[in-house]
Length: 255
Image (cartoon, rainbow, N blue to C red; front, side, top):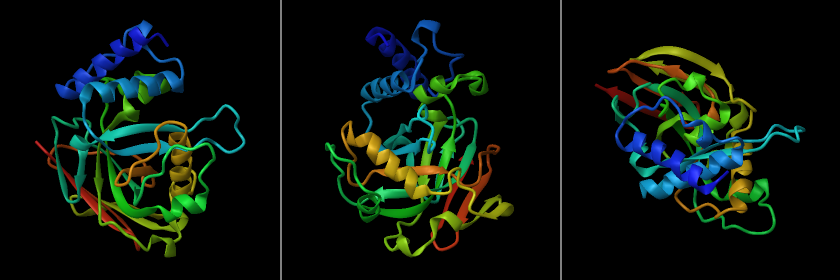
């Protein structure tokens, strides 16, 4: 993708973040046609915002699908909060939430020539319950392509993390019981629910992506996919997610 077009797309998305605004879409010439294009736009947005990347969201490639690739998106310090957290609706007008398992890196995992093993990644992270706040810079995100959404950090509006758990390895993360409540009422309760059944596998895939870029920094989080699906709330609503053995996180959308 032409660097001028990347810069133009990034300028529009960065301005929408800074002004809490929404855009109808990117100009046709600036729309990403691949994951690489979209990641390049993400990087350019990051450079414009000049904000620290505190977390990432990611997904893992589908096993056995040669055309499937891992995807990642930065989450900035301005949008990362400790539970219980408040998000003004102006910052996240869609008021979307997803309950997720997340990890925080204890140490740097630098770029290198050889892959990191699952065991190395597991030894380098603590775990926590988290809520990903979902909100897009596009006025009609459902009308956007996968690559458009990826350029917009996969509709990430924020990240709320709960208590950090060091001894998480005693838990079977594939079979955690999760409960989602809205205004104190349970709206979802089940076991598992992760898209690929393996939150740690997403973290491993993310580290592999970053290994060929700039690596991962100690203190950064990776949130690993929704165990609850996405749910859209209203201004004033309070949502909490709780995973048995892992704890919980809470967010309120303030008018």
